[in-house]
Amino acid sequence: MAVILPKQIGAPEGELLFRTSDKITDLKEAVKIVNALKETLDYYGGVGLAAPQIGISKKVFIVHLQPTKDDSDLPDVRWKEYINPEILDVSSENNVYAEGCLSVFYATLYGEVIRPNFLKIKYLDINGKEHIDDIYHPFHTRVVLHENDHLNGKVFLQQMKPDDFARLHWEKDLDIRNKSKME
Ligand SMILES: [Zn+2]
Image 1 (tube, rainbow, N blue to C red):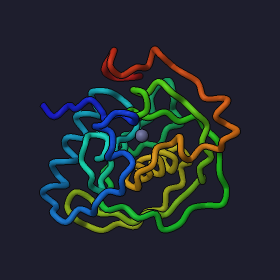
Image 2: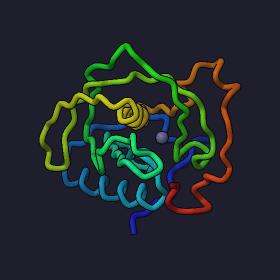
Image 3: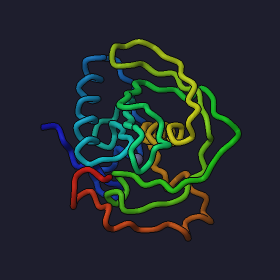
């Protein structure tokens, strides 16, 4: 089992969450990390997870997005891994949405973050093939930027406008320590 309780900000083991991750140079290592990320994200639920969240300071993250009966507007991305990602461009159009994070108080704290609607990203897939994708779905864009921030040592709280801190809210029922699969 490679399910790992995500590391938390404010805890010594969460220190990597504030560090810039290293590039992947060995694809075999990336495969192992991606598998561990998938198992952990599948167990705890959520839409994305980055390597520093499971204690590995490497440039890899995954997203898991699929339309559900409650939210049919979600993009049909399924499982996707981004290795050594680089954001090449973002749109000037943006949107506001409340984010939480498996590494921020066990996904119980939510705050509004302004993010661009679209982006262009370069990355390697699990076979080491380079891709350049345009992402046109604002929620997919949001998740990619949130996860990419983790590789740059940032959590969503650091992307919030100070004025918006007053509207941070707690969702105690979503505490990942109490259940698997937030749905
Ligand atoms: Zn996060």
